[in-house]
Length: 306
Ligand code: NDP
Image (cartoon, rainbow, N blue to C red):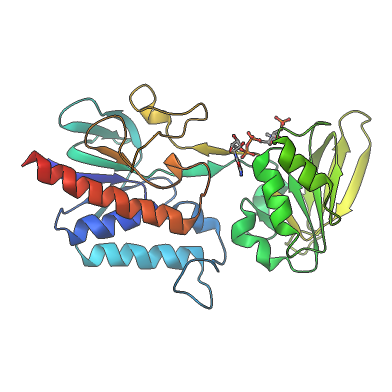
C-alpha cells in the first residue's frame, strides 16, 4: 500500500511531490493525459518568482519534476478512471485496470480552459490564441486583441489587457453580459474597450503566417459576416475542473470545483490542491503554494495515523 498517491502533475501536484518526497513519504505520482498540466501549453511564464528572464511552461514543469525525482518521488503514467475514496485504504483504478491502494491521496487534477472548439483556434493555441490573459497578456503590447466571453473572467481579462494592448474588443454571443454589473459598468466605461454583441467567432485567421492576424465573426441575429484584425484572441468562456471521476464522493460546488478547507476535502486522508479546488486565482504560483499545503496536511495526517 502507498503512503501517498498524488494525482496530477501540474505545479500543485509536483510541489506536493517535492514536499512529500523530502518528508520521506515515498510518493507515487500519477501523470494523466497532459503531464505538466495547463502550463505545457504556455509558451513563456514571466510571473513565476525566481525567473527574472521568464521561463517556458514545459521547462518549468520539467525542472519541478526533476526536483521531485531527486528526492525519490516515483512517476507512473495513466489516467484514474474510477476511485473509491470512502474505502479504507483508498482505492484508485487506472485505465489499464491496475488498482492502487493508498493511505492518503492528493488530488491535483487541475482544470481545463474551455475553448470554442474551432479547428483554426486549436491550431493557433500558443500562437496568438490563449486561455489566460494574466499569463500571456504582456506579450501583446500596442497591438489590438479580442476576448471572447461574457462572464466575469472575460471582463476581468479584457480590463487587464488594456494595460498592454492598443485596443481590446470583447466578443459576446448575447446582448447582455453574464458578469456582475460592477464589472460590466467598468468595462463599458473603458475608453480602450469595444464590445461586439450578439456575435460568435466563425474562424481564427492567420493568413498563412501561422499566427493570429484576425477573426471572422457572424452576427447571430442578422447573419452578417465581418472580419476584425487582431494579433491575439483570449478565450474566456469558462474552465472545467477535472473532477468527474470523484463525483458523488467529494463535496463540489455547482461548477464541479472541489470544496476544501486548508486543502482538506470532506474525506479524511484525501486532500486537494491547485486549480481543481480554486476557481478564482488559477495561477501557477498559487497552485504550487496549495500543493505545499496539501503535502504538509498529508504529513500531519499520516503522523496522526501512527
Ligand atoms: P462563466 O460561466 O460565468 O461565463 C462564461 C461566459 O462564456 C458566458 O458569458 C458564456 O456566454 C460564454 N460562453 C460559454 N460558452 C461559449 C461558447 N461556446 N461560445 C461563446 N461564448 C461562450 O465563466 P467565468 O470563467 O467567467 O466565471 C466562472 C465563475 O468564476 C463565475 O461564477 C464568476 O462569477 C467567477 N469569477 C469571479 C471573478 C471575480 O469575482 N473577480 C473573476 C472571474 C470569475 P453566455 O453568457 O451566453 O452563457
